[in-house]
Amino acid sequence: MSSKEKPTLGGTRIKTRKRNIAAPLDPAAFADAVVQIYLDNAGDLELVCKNLESSDLNFSRYGDTFFEVVFTGGRTQPGTTKPDEGERHPYSIIDCEPKREVILPSVIYIQKILRRKPFLIKNLENVMQRFLQSLELFEENERKKLAIFTALAFSQKLSGLPPETVFQPLLKDNLVAKGLVLSFITDFFKEYLVDNSLEDLIAILKRGKMEDNLLDFFPSAKRSAEGFSEHFTKEGLTPLVEYNEKKLFEVKLKEMKSAVTTQISENTDISEVIETVKQHVKDAKLPDIEVVRMLWDVIMDAVQWSGKNQQQNANAALRQVKSWAELLNTFCTSGKLELELIYKVQMQCYEDAKLMKLFPEIIRSLYQKDVLAEDTILLWFRKGTNPKGRQTFVKALEPFVNWLEEAEEEE
Image (tube, helix red, strand yellow):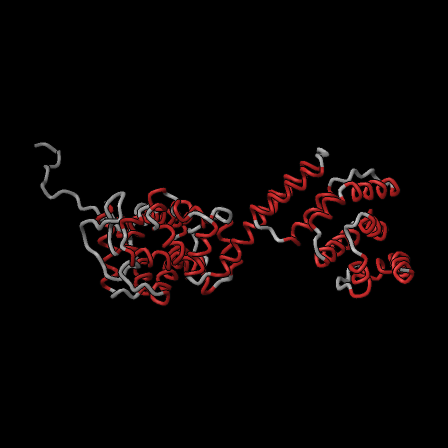
C-alpha cells in the first residue's frame, strides 16, 4: 500500500483581508464609483467628502478622473470635455447655477479633499489646464461657471491652482481670436473683485506673469489701449482701466527717460534733445508736470560726482544745471510748472546730502537762466506747502529773496 496521500478536488481556501480587495482598476469603474457616492448622498458635499475619505478608491491613480467627475458630473472622453459612457450625477460645477453662492461650496469641498489628499493638487492643475485650453467646447453659461469657480478658488486661496495654471493655458491663439478668453477673464475679474481689492488682483496677475500683458487677452482687432479702456469701462471695471492707463503712462515715461538719458550722456546738441522730448510728449500724451519732473531727474543723474570733495560736487551740479537750463526752460511754460520744479529741487536737496547746501545756488542759477520767474520763487518762499527741509531751505534762500525784493522796489 502506498503511504502517499491521495489527491482531492477541494482545493485550499485562502482568507483574503478586506484591505486587499481590489478597487476599480480602470478609470470608467472609478468614475462610476465616485458618481454613485454623489448619488447616494444626494449631492450633500459634506457627506460625499466623508464617504470618499472612507472608501478604498485609488485616488492616486485616478486623480484626473476624480476632478472630471467633480467638474462635469462624470468621466470625459480622453483629450476632450465631452461626456464619456457611464454613470453621471447632476451635482457638478458645470450643472449648477452660475452664481457665486452656489459654486462656493464646491470650492470649499475641493479644499477639504486637497487637505486630506495633497497628492491630488497636481491632478486639479492638470484638469483645469485641459478645460481652459478647451473653452470652445463649453457652452457660454458653462464658461461663466468656470470663471466664477476660478475667481472663488483664488479668493479662497485654493491649493493646487497657481495663477500661471489659469492664465497661460488661456493664451491659445484660436481662443483669443474668438473672444472666448476676453469673456472668461472679464467674468473672472468681476467675480474676484467682489471680495478682493485691485491690489490683490494685480498681485495674482504678477504671479501669473500677466501684469504687463493684459492686452494679450484681447483679439487682435481690439488689442489697443483704447480697446482695453472701452471694454472694461463698459463692464464696470473702471479701477482696472485706471490702473492700466497708469501702467502704460509709466512705460511711456520710462521710454522717454531712457532716450533723453542716452542723449544727455552723449552730450547731444540741446536742440535735438528738445525735439526728442517733444515727440515723446506728443506720441504718449504725457502730462507736463511729469515731463518736468523727469527732465530734472535725468539732468541730475548725469552729474559726474567726485567722491567726497564737496566743492567739486557742487561745481559739477551747478555746471549741469546751467548747461541744460534751456531744456528745462522749454517745458516749464507756466508758474505752476515752475513751482513744481522748485518742489522737485527741494526734495532732491533734502534727500541727497551732497546737494543739501546747494539749494539756494540752484534756485539762483535757474532764475538767471530764465527757467524760474521771480514771482514763482517768492510764492514758494512765502507759501510753499512741502515741509521736507523747508525751514532750512527758506533760511538759506532768504538773502536771495531779499535781493529780489530790493531790486523790485528799486524798479
